[in-house]
Length: 334
Length: 160
View 1 (cartoon, chains in turn cyan, yellow):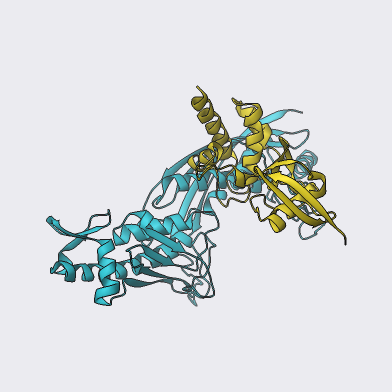
View 2 (cartoon, helix red, strand yellow):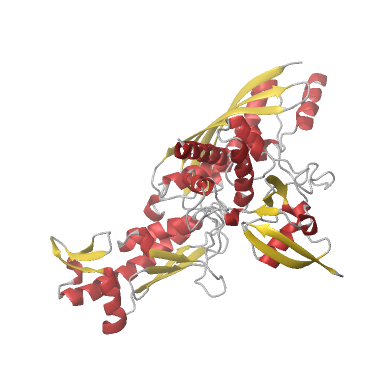
């Protein structure tokens, strides 16, 4: 009986969004009278940071500072339609819709500015600080504040835009069954190092090294936050979490946090995160969905590490001490 | 059912309410007084989201009856900021990206505050121990541990 060490590796690819009856998200953008921009969405921020990312995307597209953009995700009854915040689709789907809406709003904004400055709209550019200026002649400029006032009270224009992004439904080919379930994939690879006590079946994850390929990190610190939390969750799925430990039998399923266990702050594996950015062809500014993907590769990596440590394949999750001991017993009975 | 008068200090202000006997402090704070910073996660003392400070001690407000708090000095995360300036722990949680959905955050901050009040320069192990009664789903804990250590460093720099 001994503590045995093992190392496992696993790589995954993970679709951004899903393909049911088509996967749409819509967005509306309009300016207030003082030149702030409202983005109306039905896509909800669950804490993953959608409001911040959508504000960045809108601001970048219109050409204003991020703090001039307000994201309103208030009401899915009255807002523009969104399939929802799930399947790692929020940034990709809503982001593309926001870009389209913001482009249309930007065009109206430039047209109003052109009338005020008595130039052609195609000769105008934004300075990113809240002003519109003539290309090559920045001394001829007007603030977006004044453009919005003009649009509202003088020109009778609505500085606004409509955005729509739709991944059409993909039907399987009749002959082969082949289909295109997603247009965009994120990737990840994890190396896990574990110790397995072959007397008790207990697994300790010593370290995980993760590489995530996520398109473009639109907000690197928030991406890192998501990936660190996801890596922990992946370990938790691999070793701890289930509501049905004897599935499909419901017996002994955890019904509260005394029984439904997760690693606590004292159980953390040494965690390394590396981000690779390979911009996606159809993502907003090249982004992909890193959300759920980041909690996946740890699971097969830990399973492989357990195999490396004690030579048994546990192919049912979570990899509990009981399952390891039963597998060791079966192996010994061989 | 007869109601019970309850009077205590909450974040420096006197509060008085009539509650039904058996009302938890969590429900009294949230539903009667309107301080929604303590969160009801499990209502059985296993998640820590409802943590508040009562007379300097970290307590689970979901397992504390309001009528046992008569005359007590209660502090919640809602009372930490002063004049719109965030408490160093709140600042550190933002700077360390230690919050995602935010549901566990007020309880984490209460647990961390009691730690730092007693142990201004905690070790990592001290922080882990202090947070071990609080569950977080999003962060993987490491950013929270880092936030508490960051707040401790900021405090000691201010004191120096």
